[in-house]
Length: 207
Image (cartoon, rainbow, N blue to C red):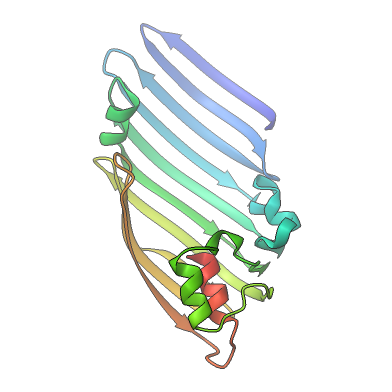
């Protein structure tokens, strides 16, 4: 974080953060938050501008060890409106509600080797499909969007994950249970170049 500006007031058990501005990841976040001790309630409004994924997470800028790399672009905007009640982390998770949206603009990425796929059913599947994950494939990305509606501790993604790239388009729906960590997703890819043998590798990178 840099150039942090914070304005907060604590009175009668209510913490009111009326302004939180900070530079992060090459961009800026603006947030407001209220914590009410008597009501055990928390609200958070957050918006960002011009964040860069590769600045937020350094390995994405270097591609070190053959991991995914953002060659250019990577600009991302985030918006979140969240609220919850509860005296413990678990209760706050169970009662969380609101919405989260993240949008990544035009970018160029290198998909990487998928080292985390080794020694499991995914690597066996890739082997059967004769896909060599040691090859790096570049992909132009028009945009990527993640939208989640959150209620009662469950993050729902109603066609809320969309990826539009030069070699594939991908739409995903599903849910994440923030209380017990269970996930349930359906992924629907549309391959733009069926003759390209590295497309499934690119798809696997995003799954």
